[in-house]
Image (cartoon, rainbow, N blue to C red; front, side):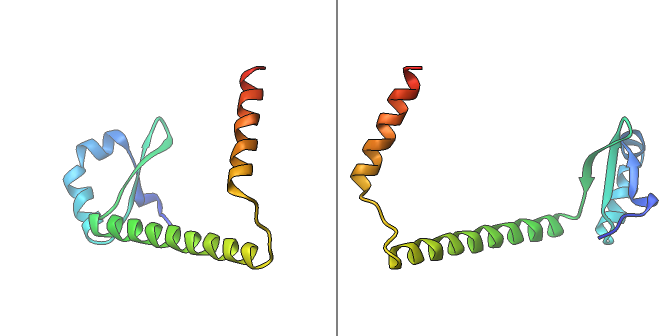
Length: 100
């Protein structure tokens, strides 16, 4: 989504016109609020925020599925290590680092 100059408001303008901004956002706009000339916060519709959160959860699930598939591929290729030996090696490294 692209923003126009009308979508960028200063914090003082946002305070003075919050009700009007909320109506615009409810109508589909997204607003960027600036503080000291820098981007500070965004005002978006709550349903759109829920949708963005749902997309993020789905992205995380896809990443987890991809990582699981890579792990299964590693197992199929024989790229495995004994868990107890690996954990023991990690403990030795931690102790060695703590001694530095």
